[in-house]
Length: 111
Image 1 (cartoon, rainbow, N blue to C red):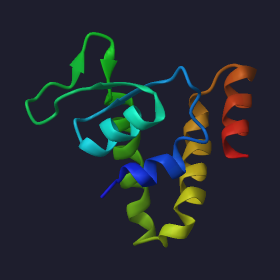
Image 2 (image 1 turned 90 degrees about the vertical axis):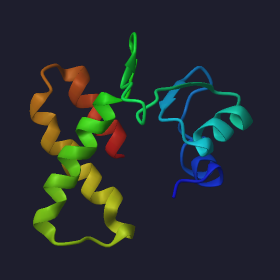
Image 3 (image 1 turned 180 degrees about the horizontal axis):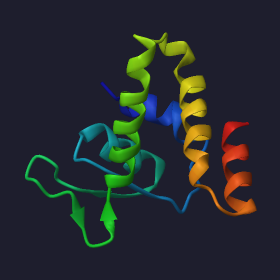
Image 4 (image 1 turned 180 degrees about the vertical axis):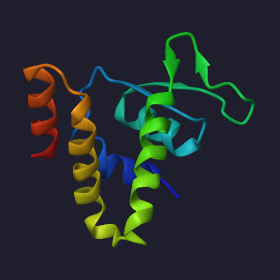
């Protein structure tokens, strides 16, 4: 269960003030955005609405699906190492990177 307190702990330090947070309609995201002064848009997945114009969460859902499928081969990982596996997956995804700026962006995110 994602809580507003956990979102403050993990997201607030790394999100710029002018970010647009897009999520499902879970209350913890709404509360976090209000408390942090962040613009928040929701999509209603339960109603089958996956996008509103340019606002969607399909990129996140696609990455999450690839990540979960990739993790299956390890037959379980310790949650304290999950960030390392996430970084490994980002490196594997880097094969899609075509410019030096793309590679630099991935390197900075891993640091």
